[in-house]
Structure formats: structure tokens, C-alpha cells
Amino acid sequence: GNSVTQMEGPVTLSEEAFLTINCTYTATGYPSLFWYVQYPGEGLQLLLKATKADDKGSNKGFEATYRKETTSFHLEKGSVQVSDSAVYFCALMGFGNEKLTFGTGTRLTIIP
Amino acid sequence: GAGVSQSPSNKVTEKGKDVELRCDPISGHTALYWYRQSLGQGLEFLIYFQGNSAPDKSGLPSDRFSAERTGGSVSTLTIQRTQQEDSAVYLCASSFQSPGTRETQYFGPGTRLLVL
Image 1 (cartoon, each protein chain N blue to C red):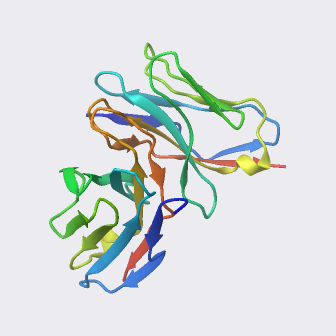
Image 2: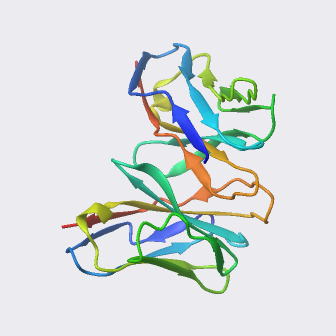
Image 3: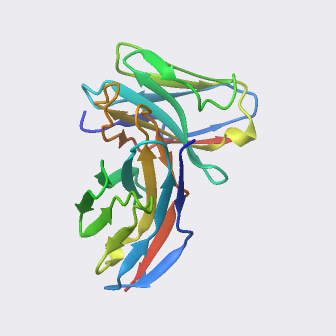
């Protein structure tokens, strides 16, 4: 079946540091890949997505590239801010399978 | 409405009681999903509706759990004879999903269920 393995947290960084949160997946065929974010006290929001190999999703300074050869979709940001503190979830949706399969989530805390 | 709404936002119940959780999807969204977020299990899929039909119920954990959707809009998730392990945040999402496409799912704020 489909699965997502996500970098264990929590992750604590200083403001303006470089961020990488690793995500790898197992799926048959060509899934779509997503990063969702959950800010404190709020619901899940889509951060970015990619639907085919070599696609790059980007939003709010975050980027992730769909790498089929390494089955990865790592989340990166060049300079994090305190407002980026949240829980980040990597997820996939398989072809012909409409449900999302999520990773365990990574709690990110940015210190001023 | 502007987004997916869920009610109640919080629910405390006693073990053995039945509960109903409601989801109002984004207007015009054909697909509706229920997920559960718990400390031990992370985010798990429960059930998916396309219109009023549920082609995928594979995530429902037991026959105490059921869901329905009426008029292609509102959905209700019912948990009968609640157990303490049912305590979790129940999330609803909706999308413009058509079979074979993979559209973005938009999530509601969730219902936090606590079973005492």
C-alpha cells in the first residue's frame, strides 16, 4: 500500500536559518504529492503540491521538488521566520485512489 | 460558505454514548472526506464520498462508525457506543474531485472529541 515517511521532529531553528524537512514515499504508479501545514489553533492548510515527476511546488517561500528517482518530496525554505512555527505534514494521493495518505507530521519551532 | 465548517468544535461524552459530528463542505464541492487525527495514529483516512455515495469506506475502524451524506452536501459521521480510544480530532475535507483526478482537498477546523 501507499505510505509516507517523514522526518521526525520536533525541529527547532533560529530565525533566518535554512530549513529542510525530509519526506519519502512508497506508492505504485505516479502519485500526487502535497505539503500541508497546521498553524497553532488552526486547521490543516495546503502549503504546496506537485503532480508529476520533476515538478516543483512553491508557496510562501517554501519549495519542494517531486523526485521520482529517489521517491522524495523534501520541503525547503531559505530563511525561516517565527511565523513559520507550525506542524508540517507530507502527504500523497495515489492514482485512482482519492484519499490522502499522510506522514506523521514534523513540529517546527522558530526562535527569534 | 467560504470554507469547510464542522460542528461541534468540541464534544465531551461518556463512554457508551452515541455522538454525531457534522460537516458542511465548500459549496459546489462534489467530494467529501473524513479523517481522524490522534496522538497514537497520526492522520488517518476514514471515508470518502462522491456525491451521496461512499466508494471508499476502508478507513472506518469498526462497525460502530458510520457516515452519510445527503443532497450532495452536508455529511454526518456517527460513532455509536463510544470508547475512550475514539478520542481524537475528526477532520472533514472537501474537493472538486472527479473520479480519476487528484484535486486539492480543503480541510475544516475539526471536531475535538473526548470520551470519558
